Image (tube, rainbow, N blue to C red; front, top):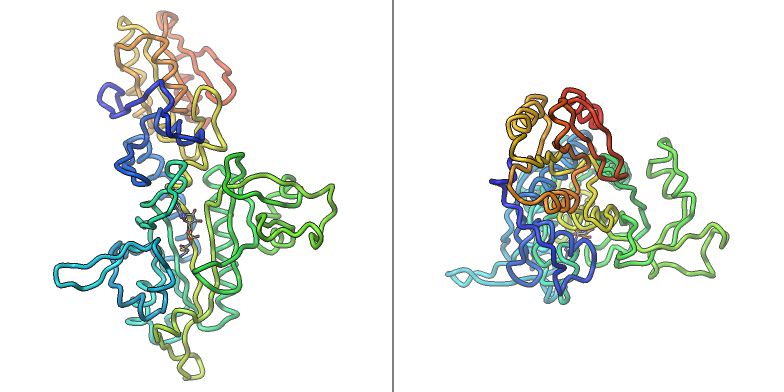
Length: 426
Ligand code: 5CA
């Protein structure tokens, strides 16, 4: 992509109303445009990261047999009346009527809609277990939308719903999903801490939140320092749930099971939340399936959320410096930024750009006639992990590669530069 034709409205100034660094950087890096309070448009740079997150989530979930669907954002209120949540959900749920005065809601979550689909088609235990998911927009009329995409009113969520014949089966599915979450967050280059959580209005008796550590997180976490010394073989629900980890509302210093020296406390951003709630919805909405003994049952359900647009903010909170964003290579919007410093080198710069594309590397090519300082600061601000800079040494066929994270610079030939980028992403 040539920067001269890319919509990247970067700005030097810090927006007045942005209180946290990810919100400031997302606006300064031209990622989001606020349409109204808590409602954003995602501009091309952000959209490319969303696409990466979408792909990673899809890969992780398809691996364990989940099936992707798309449900409507607008739902009939009747389903919420059936489940008994119409009144409970309160003012967070946006309610309105169509031209025939039929009540509708803009979905804050989809337990009701998915149960309505499942009860239409899943009649036998032979069709179970099933996990259906979507990556789609939600609306919650948050009383205090804040921190940019972190607590928006309209936001993108991955929501998955599982149906099982038995409680044992459903608990097994929950564990499979828990482990898939560990896999997914790892593929995103993120370290997360799973906490035992309060199921809140979703209901049920088993629930975990997944948090990214960041000073600006909304909750204070208390956890075993062993989380910082985990080995790959420890990354399972069975191992991790043996370690102490709770949010402040669940932490009781007198009942805490680990010694004070091992207790760590840091703030965290909730990027995922999973629930097991048995037959709460299948019972109230009368979903009936025949079990293996030929008896009618209400299947056992769980639901599993990931805040996709919130992840944009969380990743930036945990990976930035004074110059701007530093994308983990797994989710970067482009793999490399190419900066041409002089009009005279345009032919060579174009050549390298085409080489990179031929090697299936995604590149944002600054071919504009901005000043050198502006070109460098824009590239640092948008945080691509690698930069290739074409300066006067191109006469000797040499370019400079800068690693955004460390600031290290290496001089090499154009061919080696392409190879360097390829190896970096291997
Ligand atoms: N039905 C369940 C699971 S599918 C559910 O709705 N869970 S939730 O309420 O915990 O939301 C799932 C995830 O969405 C949260 O972990 C969080 O990462 C994200 N999320 C929730 N509210 C917002 C919001 N206002 N803005 C941005 N992301 C949000």
